[in-house]
Length: 383
View (cartoon, rainbow, N blue to C red):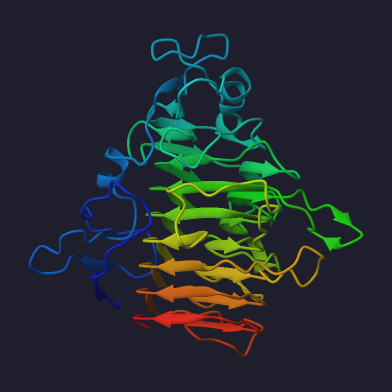
């Protein structure tokens, strides 16, 4: 069996409060890997994958808290000694007022789909600050095993101009069924506009903004591990994502480890960026992504798809996006792929042993690349 090692030398700029990376990642994928920190200390260097340092020193501050346990009851009060059972009850009962952030805390344990699957958050936070997010978090890093269902699972938004905005998901293991019941459109975490059509074409409305997925392990979803659509300010960082886009028979569901498809800008004049908004409006950074293997045109590690919104009247998404410091390996499709998109920086990524699916229906098979893309920067990658 092949082995390879990677040296991580970059310094991430995504979030404040992150120190040096933690343990070596050894995901359950086809090739074992060893990731070695830089010699000489490497102050500020981080390893990809879930980070105990980031988890224990989060960007957000939990000023108001509610609590859930796998043996809780929605008849309880939601305090640490009287925990609820379901996220849907927590979201409908909690109040997002006063000083945030507002945190829903899951006790470590194994949860069935009814405990955490939601079809759109009925509320969210109110600002891109450490005190402005609605946070859904496990109390122990990746100690909450969330067994999923076919279809969408943690659907933060499923409608136009959704209430679920300024949301952080932190520290879970999300486990899909690989479409065992025949539903091949299964995602771990998703945002979208509900798929409605209008005179301007399909997927032609804005859905949500400011969504973060951090420090999580996401696998076994028949379409995509993380599917972020129809909005902006999407941040995906320090996750381990593998074994998605593997539905029975590998039918053409076109999923990837992380899929951004497409971005849409917030309507001009309705949002003023804060000091915490990064120069790249949306990004994927410091993720460990491998083993997405179905045929079709996807099964990529990361894809930026149709951000020019060519199939509707929304208009091209022009702010710059970023994919940086990711380790991408053993995917059936490309490592990091952009199609019908523009203004994306691909920097400091390590890309290895991708384009493995022999029935893949494209002749474009680079580790890092794009098709019908403009304004792309490729900097300091290993492929």
